[in-house]
Length: 80
Image 1 (cartoon, rainbow, N blue to C red):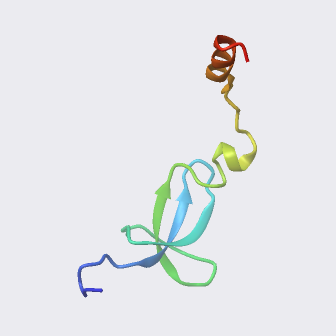
Image 2 (cartoon, rainbow, N blue to C red; image 1 turned 180 degrees about the vertical axis):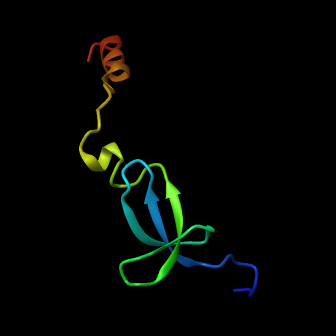
């Protein structure tokens, strides 16, 4: 790889603003805001609106949409 053309990859703390859940991950994005993590090191904080702690798919609150409309019309149209 060419040097000095890739963004700096670093560890950051992602903060879910809706629940307050934090997790440590890696990103090329940086922030002026920092926080001290459980390991005693200070990391930049990236605020996100949705994480695995608040997303309906992971929390079990997902509502399933009725996808049968198009399929039912097709079957009805061709008498299947």
